[in-house]
Length: 168
Length: 184
Image (cartoon, rainbow over all chains, first blue to last red; front, side):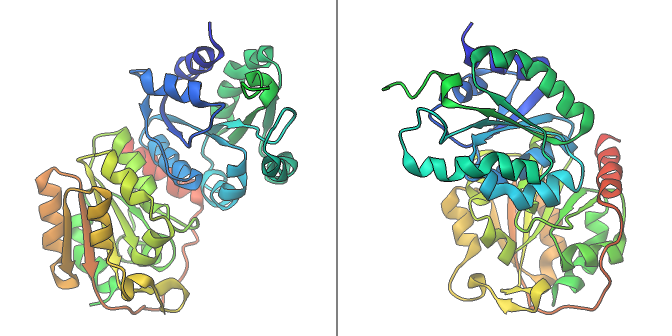
């Protein structure tokens, strides 16, 4: 089974039926899989804080949400995470492509990569880092944990997890 | 007519529906005028009332009214294209357009100068965009609810604020009673 399908199977198995996404090359396969599933309403967002607003509304409306985004979005969404998702105590799995790690070809991506875990730690956001594909075996447990504790939870997926950038 | 007068006038219409209310004075005014479990007050996160309302409308069948401001819509302008492209016919976005950032001291917004949010909404692809005067808000809102079509209402009104206290209700209480009202 492809890793994209395995990830989306885990979302569906945990009753996640509302997914918002901001595009990423590494997450393109997952986003395509999300779009293809009948049981998931896929609402692309223009920006990640907007996406978190959509997820907050969907959750209050009875659907379990998830957001798919790049790690640069942590810089965009700190206020939303603190004053909406955490303040009102809402669950939000964040599947994040961890750009700027080993095998990264674009130097500027490193500039947010070096802040990513520090910012998540500062926000007291539970954070999991997928480096090899077997790490994704924990995704099901991470999703259950997220909806048990009603917190935003970060799942960082680096280039090694995705098998590089295709041209290296 | 200023925003608090409009909210007072339309409270009997809002009361029967789920309302997501913008940060700052709009939420404080609605809370003072007609606090009830169907109101979701934003205590932070400027700009996301329209996004939360859309997510809520897409997730369930009850009518959802987001009360937003021109300044807040300008801070999340992409929301109008997301709304246009993800039609929820149980959703009404009501933008109280007084051309100013009321909660921070009535500094002018660009909507109070050259920018026309109703034209932005139309250009984004929103199909039912209605502009009305503050005095006609209740009638316009009721007609939008009755139409069963997703509608953007831009209410042109005067800037101005009344003095009132901040909301001290715990956010988790606001959210929990709102979710119970949604599920009821």
